[in-house]
Length: 181
Image 1: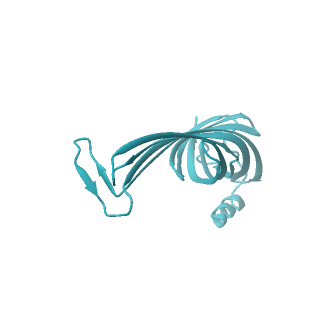
Image 2 (image 1 turned 120 degrees about the vertical axis):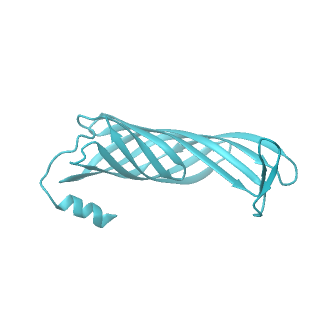
Image 3 (image 1 turned 180 degrees about the vertical axis):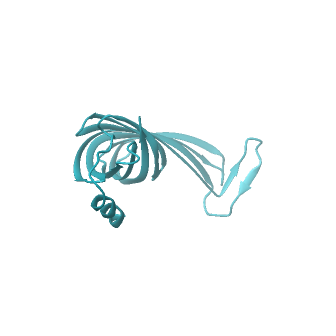
């Protein structure tokens, strides 16, 4: 990855990307801790709002379909977990390299909300819903290009401190891309 960034930064003439200048709003997809639809809105050249909606679905063991038919995959405990999450972060952004590609880094502060439904079918059927809140501190790299001038590729790690309903430290990680309008 670093050699790819260095090759892009070293070659070609210096031309500017439109991301963060004439194109301030981007939408895209992030893959990692959970698949997310992501967006970013530049407030100015050095700050932005980053937001997203994440989806997560996991099955293990046995579960029942809508007709009540049981299915088993033979692994340990039996449960089915589906969840969605929302995050909103304020980012401070600064430039590292500006050549034929522009490499920025960012750090931010924000919040994460998760809601999930948990089904247990192994011993007895029960369904439980839970929600959690976390404070986040995303840190990442943003790569934009002269051509196409509307594309941003990013890599991000976000330590998250959950404080409702439990206290736990987690690290979320994402790689993704946004198209700017």
